[in-house]
Image 1 (tube, rainbow, N blue to C red):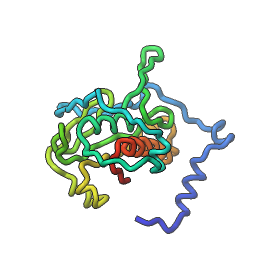
Image 2 (image 1 turned 120 degrees about the vertical axis):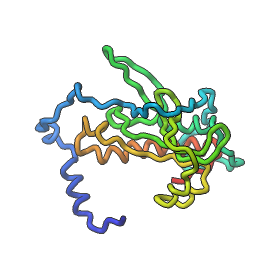
Image 3 (image 1 turned 45 degrees about the vertical axis):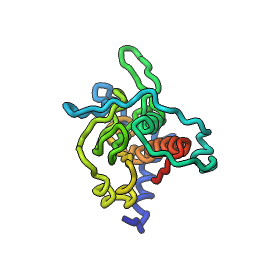
Length: 215
């Protein structure tokens, strides 16, 4: 859908932008008893562990993003390469503890370290993984199988035609409350900021590994 009237966009930005006055007069507070979980869990579904001995990008991230790397022979992705992409896009990199509560840091930063973006995989058959629709579970470093079978053509109808022939597509969604718990109406901005950081990591990792990547 093409937006031709920017009035509502400008109204939203004016209403949700920070100022010295808005920060001092806001009545919002953090309800720690109602803090959302940082992880989405699908229960009682098959889970495929991802290999932890995956390769690591060897190229400078900025050169990879800008397309300045020497042309490589294109790789065919397998489960190990997929594990690498998912780890550097949304994997857990650090665990900290404050009091009795654990906090997990991820490869891609997020506003307030709340990490509202979830990653899903729509895949054909690749070495080590059957065609299906999967949810990336970062805390177990595994793929949770949501649907068996090849749904790439279905995804292509709803989005990008090339998804039908791509080995796999990574789809991002946002859990609104996970960010809105702290940032309220500003969260609409943050979902796109946070998904943009993940997209940058994903693009750089793919380029470093010699994989075609289309947004």
